Image 1 (tube, rainbow, N blue to C red):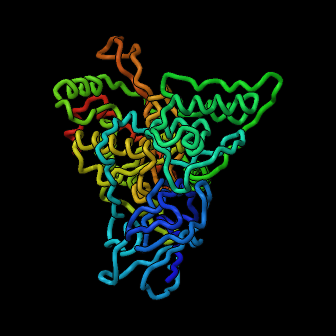
Image 2 (cartoon, rainbow, N blue to C red; image 1 turned 135 degrees about the vertical axis):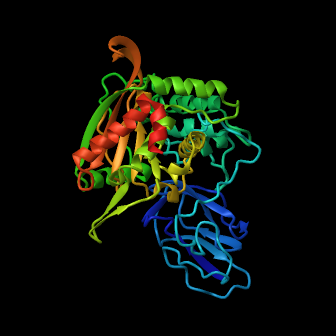
Image 3 (cartoon, rainbow, N blue to C red; image 1 turned 90 degrees about the horizontal axis):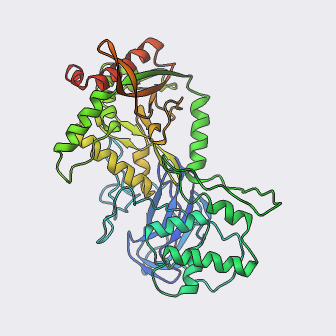
Length: 467
């Protein structure tokens, strides 16, 4: 019998998803829960499991297409199955025991906190956090149109995550590279050689290719992106589709800026004692221990201070006419990725030790950079941290993530002359920038909270008084 699989709501009321890549082809026989495709929502790249075991008769969208929730996605031929209507979208929860539980949708989760979706470990590979920066989005079409024979639909070109990210940034479709190279692993040199061949065939590179190439990855804290240099006499522009994380971020920032009245206050802090504490902890840490840094210590100080200033750990419920105070801390950590800005949440951060916070931040960063943050990990939270100091910036006016009450920006730690013990000495100094929702938090409470965080950073021993 034939069955149609409709794109389900993958979480948080999302209305559409972009097909990143198909992992199956028409005519393939698939098992229940086998991954059919990778799709990008406004919040994350997720794997879409099969709701049926059977033969795929149709793929109703191509890689790069944006599909609305509820639209037909995959056609199945299921042996011996009775014809049933296609499931409504969002996918309805299946009662416990009524049938197989599908990964990612199906049986309703238990009441309480959102469940975390288990991550599939990469078979036999381990990737460092800094290197694991694959951008799992569909590469844009080449600016120069060529027609080599592509590989069979559904096959994934063989390459490493960094090479896929590099190709994506240059606007190179690896399927076209694979069509010229055959069945071998594609390297970065292959991508560069392919671009040269295409440029030679067309008599030079296009302005779009040059523009995309210059934006292959975000600038590090100490580098500046290469300048886009169009051909002589050319006045070039590049149009970038607004979709995925960028679209969601834009909508969220507008919503936040024009819903919550923002107030930002600043405080410059002597963090020399914190720097000394970090150096001491690193010196005595085990080789495999998570690396503790300034962000970790600030996260701990914020968790302690939130226990004394519940207004900053609250959310505004306009429909109920209530301010909802949380007695636990779900802490957001802003992560700048190649796909845009996201703010994953560390659940129950107030219950974690310094080492546990460091490990959680490292895992959160690794997952965010790989584009695999589950939508459930982006929901909730009342307070967030953003570390603009890694870019050499001292202060800013951060915008609240929608639904949150406070966000603290960490400036760069600078060695500078500072008053200390009645004299002037070189000290480690950092500026903290706190934005908060003035509907919930008065100026006095915001200032007192910021001072409490600063006190812990100036004298980490004060944490014993805030516990």
